[in-house]
Amino acid sequence: MGVQAEEGSTDYTFTQTLRTGSDGDSPPPSVSRVPSRFCMRKTMRFIGQLSWLCGALVSIRLLAPAPMLAQGAVSLQAARGQVILRAPGSACRVAMLDEQPAQRGADSLFRFTGVAPGGYRLLCGSPLEIYVQPAAELRVTLSTSTYPIFQGRGAGLNRYLIAQKAMNMELLSALWRERPSVFSREWTDAYDEDLRQLRRTPGMDDAFRERESMRLRFKHTFGRVTYPYFHWRESDERKIVSAPDLTALLSGVPLDDLRWSSLPEHTELLGALIHENARVELASDTMLQRGDARWMRAEFAAALTLLADSTLLRRTTTRLLANAIEENGSRGIDSVYGRWLALGVDSASRRRIDSLVAVDRGMEQGHHTESYRTIDGVAQRVHILRPEGVDSTVVTPAMLWFHGGSWASGTWWHSPGVMGALRENGVTVVGVELRTSNRFDSGPLEQVEDAMLAHEWIVRHASRLRIDSTRVGVAGFSSGATLATILGTRGLLPLPPLPVGDNPPTPTPATVRRYPAAVIAVGACVLPGGPAEDGFFRKVVGAQAVVSEFTPLMSIMAGQPPTLFVHATNDEYCDMKSVRSFVEQSVSYGNRVALSEVENAGHFFGFYHPAGQRQMRRAIQDALRDWGWMGAR
Image 1 (cartoon, one colour):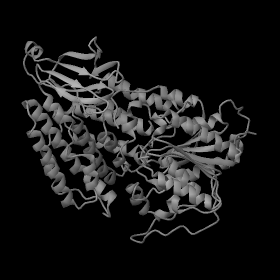
Image 2: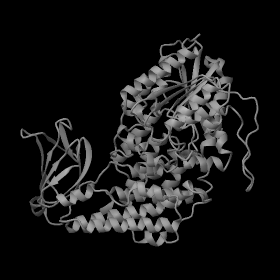
Image 3: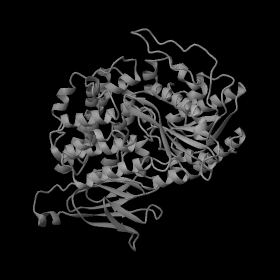
Image 4: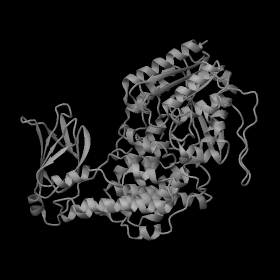
């Protein structure tokens, strides 16, 4: 499945996680990106190719302080106020107002003094956006059971900030299927309602009014920019059609005004515009349609065209590169790295990008790597990680590992919890590089083909690699788990030929099917094209093949390989009921299928749920023992 971290944060403990096989499906380098990077809200399950939107919509990064007085230092100092925080003892030991820490005093209060007017991120437990007026004392009370309570001058402004807005993600996603005229009317009505709510807010100063009006304007424009793609994706629309008035709407939006560049809504809108311009670049530039890192290169080109302000251009391209590396690895980065440096980026930005590249490339050390195929001049590799404590001459079972990322992002070493559990129990793990849409502008069927070819390559070279060719299975997380389950149900069949003209695709004829030796699926969507899951899968796969043929729940038959599902009962993206139905039906056909249900956890339990992590490892160990895979020979 592939929300946003503070810029520059990198969790180097992730490297150690992969090498030691410690508990959990760890995220890409920045741990603070976990909820955002993988879109922890149910309404965002269909982000897919638009990885920029995933972080933007659920971002917890709030407003940076923005001094609003043009007077000299004396006047500015006189306008400074203070923030007094009351919070439960369990909430935090140290509170933070942006980068300013405060200890709990003898009266159990946290005090921040000398606070310049503007917007801040208050952190004591969950982050909270607040606004401090000139020379004001703002008192904030946090509770575990109620909304924050604000007192003092500016309390009404802060109550406005936490109030539900009419323009929200639930409304936006609900309107994606509607006709353009209906969407435009209802989204604009919501914008007007939010403006009325702002005007009714008591105690506003001019700076607050201007800032919040601009945020609403950016949010409204963001919805208008993103609607055409998601309408195509979630409806029967055959192509993406931009609104005819969008150019006029954008002409009055101050994207290049640095005063607003710290607003998350500005970042969201800018990311959406760059992505949509990149879509046009990809469709028209044959050079971008070849090679690696296609969307990164296209977005870089779009940013150069879209942004006139050099400071904003440097910030934006740095963010593009950082996101691309964290989500997809560093392959292909060299194609834009030199052009990025030529923009005059500062040393801190360069260190940030270089460190992310170093983390990714460091993952390639200490194990054997080979190419299983070449696509458009780009080698697709398998990373062979032998079991821990097993002599290199010993023949072992093997599991191909398919990473997650909504078919759009991810790289072979992401989410290593399952990888560690397998290696601890005597199984060689083969991390497979897959064609993601971010790197190759591809879709799920390309990954199905990659997975089958990688499996064939490992079996063919098993003797040389000291792998038991009769025990080569497949495993994955999220979309990677769906991929593994497709191979475990559809089998290792050739892909159907592409449809010609308007002729619909035809099903692959029934043949004697070959399967992987076993399947481990953590967070799999067994009904990926179903109404409760992913419109992207239905749209893209349906253009090339019969969707049901690549739907595990609709492809169950006798003789399929032993399979272990590990699935959270509160999974937001892959329906638990469908998994239970799959297990019940497959067992009725005489197949060996086990389900380990992780109670009271969501799709990404491997990132935050220690009990679920331990349960997953035990379930894998039990399955390997049941399959007779525990002993190397």
